[in-house]
Length: 107
Image: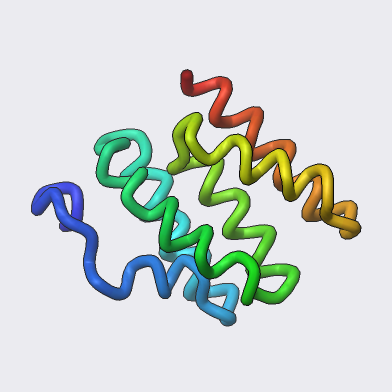
């Protein structure tokens, strides 16, 4: 529906950063489709998702990084690079690297 209406639902970003995995997974599936069919719309989630990153727990952070890779454009690359350089959690470093790779693939 968001793709058809060319608008994000107000709570969509909250769902992408939700503490419950099942909720995040549903939103992430919608994001994957949106990133393919309406990349400009998907890109609108990048700023709000990045704002939630520092407040999120580890697993949520990893999913945010994944989503940034799906939705993001080159503008988010410097922030992802900072995560890669400063993060101590190996899984989050890998998620940041994969997000960067995904953005490069799309470019």
